[in-house]
Image 1 (spheres, rainbow, N blue to C red):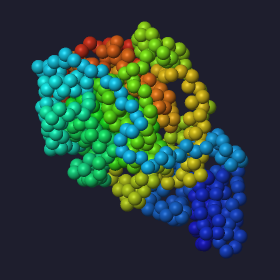
Image 2 (tube, rainbow, N blue to C red; image 1 turned 135 degrees about the vertical axis):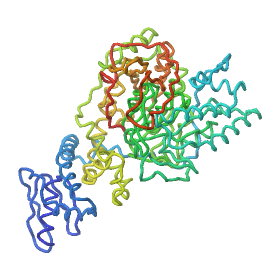
Image 3 (cartoon, rainbow, N blue to C red; image 1 turned 45 degrees about the vertical axis):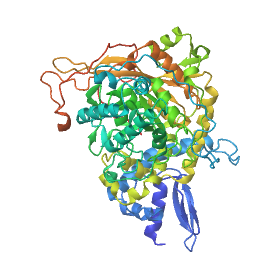
Image 4 (tube, helix red, strand yellow; image 1 turned 90 degrees about the horizontal axis):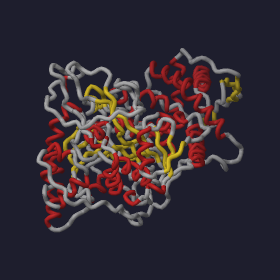
Length: 632
């Protein structure tokens, strides 16, 4: 081994402590700054030094060291960036996690959370799971105005179809026309599945004529986040690299909805590779204020549901991609217990974090949709039968609800007035590196899925260079041992949160980053519910009906989604925040949109906006400024 390569190996070990580089004659493992002492025949003894050296300026030596990871394909600036990122980000997290779980007990304490359901011989379906008992609506009349039809609940639309006041084909036509009318404003649709939609609607109508009714989703249109595969249609993952990709696989969630009679009308925008709200044709906007973005990555799912362009939509969350867009767009969103919904046929960021969930206009609608899509997916080893009680039958007077310091006061008061026992509450845990655990987990998992993408240089064409490309380069320098230590620290976190969960559910800010990270690491369900509005701080001349939405989160322990849903339904039965309609095409008298040419032609028609309510605490910032949120 030449002296230059020896120096490079020592250098990368110094820059990236704990990085194990395996050779045929033994490993190099750095716990601090190291130097190599030759022992002959290519064997080196690593000697600990007391301090870390500065990041090397000799990029060529770093590149030599990267050869031993089979990763010598980065540019000079990228290698320098990786070195700095490893020192400033990776190393502190490694040391924090190691301090939490280091022991000589052979793993008896703080086991890794990387486990799977071994019951793999499972047939599709919901064997062993009781279905929810939905309310049966009677006396529902078809409105005269299509806008009013568009904002009806799933149960109300189902009643119109069941009583043959409207056909699924007619309903599909209404929502497709609305999508096409407003998509140039919202930038929310990737692909219209028009031919498929009319075929599925026709089939739903024919079944009903034969006396076959498949349930509350029979004939109901919906949208899918464009990371979910549907045969014959593009599944772009929101990225230039995959914008022509067709995956001829039926994703589990799509199969479940198809068997329930639902009608797919569009593949909806996702932030590129399920990150934020920027995708290859633009950036999705917030129907409540079209000068704001929707946040992501389930951007199109949230925006179209909020705007009444679909009755419901499917999104996903690794860390924040349901909670943030639901909050920004002012709709009801459910991030279910981890493992509730199978993910085969869906782009993956992290197998131990990814969850599919729902965007709806009410918690009752969320309950209906989650009931249709839950169950064991035989091709997803982490999915399982989550045995939920019927949320429509929960007696909330027997439920104890904690409220955090940042809980919406109105929500606490409303639930208390309905007989719910509410008490002050605080989650207690000692882990300080919650975000660090999540980032190590997510970044390494993501890189394992997109290794070929990075190696081929396609990350150079990524839509937002300061996002995934940076994180995945840094992830290449995270060693296996520290990835597993992060999972052990995560196991400790889960146990501590479980021990402190002394209530049946709790209320708190839905978009607090610590709770978003915590909830996803633990696998905790949350229902995001709208709780009011605040006026934007800088309205255009001539006045505006745009608003900044206010929401709260109702959290429950894993496998207790029904409790959170029942509480959300109770709150919404006493309030009307979830019934408000956004002013999608609210333009001032002389207003145009300098933000983008695509929305400059927005029509100046009006959408009804009902009463505006102000509340005492705001779960979403202090003004209407568009905030970049790292949601996945």
